[in-house]
Amino acid sequence: MQQIKTILILWKATIIQAMEYRVSFLFAIIANFADFSFGLLQYVVFFTAAKSIAGWNSDQILTLYAVFMFIFALHFILLYPNLIEMGEMVNRGTLDLLLTKPVNSQIVLSLKKISLEELGSLAASFFLLGWMAFKGVLVLNFYTLIQFGAAIIVSMVLVYSLFILLMSLAVKLEKMENLSQLMWSLFSFCRYPVEIYPGWLKHLFYSLFPIAFISTVPASAILGNLSIELSLLGVALAFAALIISTRFWRYCINSYTSAGG
Image 1 (cartoon, one colour):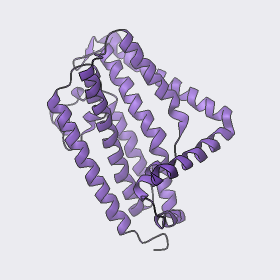
Image 2 (cartoon, rainbow, N blue to C red):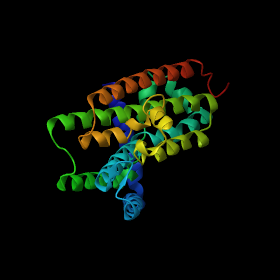
Image 3 (cartoon, one colour):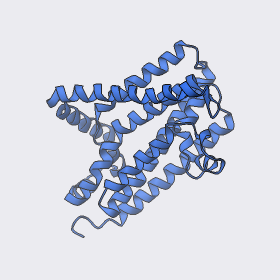
Image 4 (cartoon, one colour):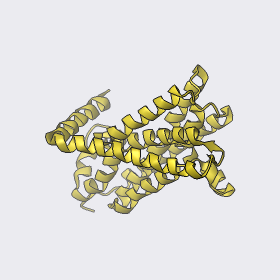
C-alpha cells in the first residue's frame, strides 16, 4: 500500500509538470493520434495489392494493429520514461538516494514517472477496436474476453520483464542511449503477425524470444482463434520471464557500488 501511495504522489507531480505547458501537451496527444493514423495507412496500401497477409485478412490485420498500438501506448505511458531516466539517475547519483529509502526499488523505479503524450495513440487503438467490434470482426463472448484479458496481461508482463532487464543493464553500463533502442526494435517486430516470418524465426518468437505473445497472440484471442495450449504457454513464459528479470535486477542492485565507485 505504501508503494502505491508513493507512486501516485510521483504521478501527480509528473502530471502537474506536464500541464504547465498545456498547448504543447495537447499538441503531443494530437500528434500521436495522427501518427497512429499514418501507421494505419500502410496496411491500407498493403491490401490494395493483396487480399491477405500470411493468412490474415484486412480486418484481422487492423485488429492486430489496434492491439499492438494499445500495448505500445501503455509501454510509453508507464515504462519508457523511467527507462530513459534510469541511466541519468545512475550518473547523477540519485539512484543511491532512492536505494536508501524503505521502498521496493524495482517497483518505484519502474513506475515513478509517467508520460501522457501517448494518450492519443491509446484512444485511437480503442476507437479502432470499437470499429472492429461494430463490424462484427471481433468474437465478443465470455470465453474470448477472458482469453484476451489474460493475453494482454501476458503481453504486458513480457514487455515489463524486458524493461527490467534493460534497467538492470543501465545500473551496470550507466548509459541507456543504445539500450533504449532495443525497445523500438522489439516493437518493430510486433507490428505484423509472426506468421510472416520464416519458420525457424517464428518458432523462436513463440519460445526463447516470445514476442509473438505481445501482439499476435492477444489479437488472435479477441478474434477467437487462440488455442488454450498457446494461452497456457504464454502464461508460463511470462511467469518465467518475470522471475528471471527480477532476479537479474536484484543481482545488479546488490553488486551496485554507487556513483562514487
